[in-house]
Image 1 (cartoon, rainbow, N blue to C red):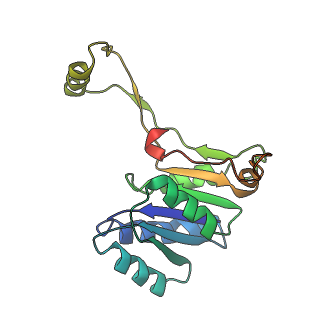
Image 2 (image 1 turned 120 degrees about the horizontal axis):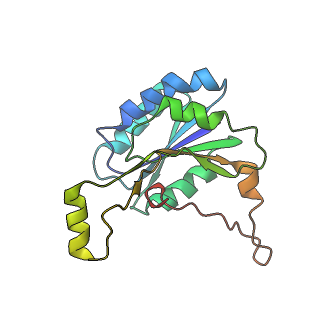
Length: 180
């Protein structure tokens, strides 16, 4: 199992997130790796990532020298990890042990390509609706916002099969988790 942490300027959250993973992952898998993909951070993320990799053999780090975006960081993570099952974390959300366990329980479904847990729908507050209405008067009062999940699980073998027959290149591209 692999976990990819795409990060940008995450000096305040990176250590905590890695510790959370190192706490829960041994409970669900005997072998795992955590890859930190630093997407061109300008703070101390790079140094923190290297220190975590030095202290914990399960942790590795890769760095983009300039910011390339979340999708590129995820693609880099997929290219540099080896697990049959790959978890990708959205750095804007906290690590959830229960979410990891729920997704891990789906790993034996061979029809699965990508999975993510759902968060409940919630109705935006009145001040959000007012802002939306200022942009577009057609926003309904009862619109719902589907909260995004912070973790997605990818079956590497299924992704490898998603190849364009004309070019031979992978047709797989993950949208940024916030866009799902």
